[in-house]
Length: 396
Image 1 (cartoon, rainbow, N blue to C red):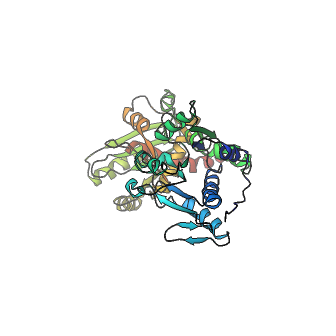
Image 2: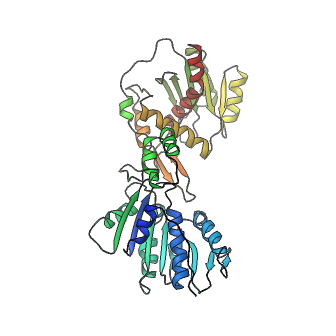
Image 3: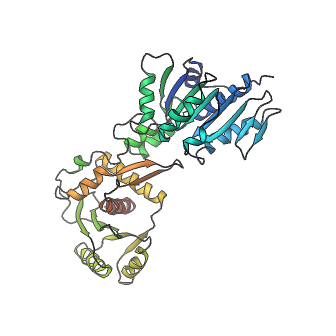
């Protein structure tokens, strides 16, 4: 017998759900309700008509985002069977909802589908849709819902463009997070203040940015020739070079001016320590923040034993994202000033990029074949400046 799925969609969800287009492309901000809409439609397909529905994610791990509500709601339906190993819910009328991963597109071949949701499809391989999923919809005249936050102008953007054309099979939708009536306005405004403009525009406003991978905006605006105070207070960020990387010391005046960069390659550690000591003597009283991962640990200890005020920094994916986001926000607010004669720093800042991992996390790095040593030294210095600046204000 048919199963009725109770739902109370908000206005935007109802608009998407009621659209008759076979293929609907939904670009939505974080927490807009894309997942809930897709889950309800999967269960409705399986319950109302005994159909076969798939929830398809870019990776097995990201599939948990859909499986948690699917399994929870499925377990609340009398007579439904929830198979956690297979990530499949079978409803009393024989319809099924299953969570699948698109990390191996060939594994999606062979099944006929009535309905599917491609979750975060901007981070999915396009050939998963073209070679496996689209053919699976043919024999049952199945429908598809593409949901994602944007990621530059990739194939998800092209589908969204297609949905804006005069094509009855396709329809495109775009909703910012603020269109979800259950998300407080003050929470969205807090996110706007805390995030770089680029990230907020993509993640909360659901905007397709042309430079989707770029991290730092308005870099050239920071190269304005403004001079640092003559007698300022300083912090020094230290990024230690590895096999093919440079060691960089970045001196930052607390007003936001980069006053000196010392960049060296193929230099033994004793010489690096000596150069840092000499740099510190030129800026007495400067707090030093230095990466302590791997070989950085013994160097930090040696510097501390020599009497230098060194604060160690452990680089993890989370801590790196925090200091890079903080630096990106500083550029957007115009708080950073860079000398005109630092082309390496300017080039690394302009090339620096972000990528969404299969887990859903964001990683930051230089493009393949390039370096980010000056970026990391500046980011470390800026993070120390943020910690020190309140103390400066209190002493004025």
